[in-house]
Every structure is written in structure tokens, then in C-alpha cells.
Length: 84
Image 1 (cartoon, rainbow, N blue to C red):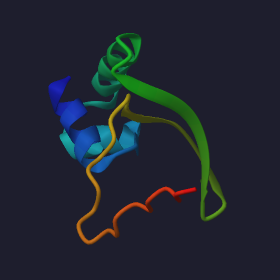
Image 2: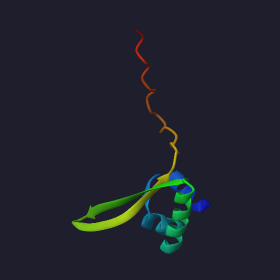
Image 3: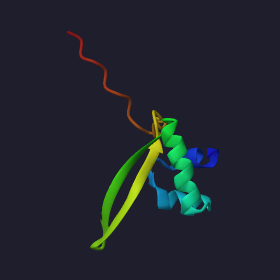
């Protein structure tokens, strides 16, 4: 399960099929582990329907719950609140 969490932290939100392919774990095992992580509120799941070249692709997207990735280098600083 740690391998899946690390993958999601590194790559952000991904489909379960993408996670299985990238980690080399079987899709059934990935779905089982993600269900356990979702039950512990460590990941957030969302059912998704996408269309690739007119073909309907259904899946579940997962992301780490409560995780905000670090800001990209070179990003401008946030705006300062206006003083009244």
C-alpha cells in the first residue's frame, strides 16, 4: 500500500488502471488496496467517464486525501492582501 501512496504523491490523481500499470501490481490487487486506503480515508476516490477518440472509458480516479503538492519552482509569490 505504501508503494501506491508514494506513486499518488509523486504523480497526483490517477486512474486505477494507470496505477496498476505503473507499479507493476495486478489491477485486482490495486483495487483491493485502494479500497482499504479509501476506507481509512487516506485516499479519495471518484468515478470517472472519459472519452478517448470517441471510445467511452470508465474508471475510478484516486488521489491522496489532504495532500497538497509543493509549489512548482519559479512560481510567483502569492498576492498580498490589500490594506484598508
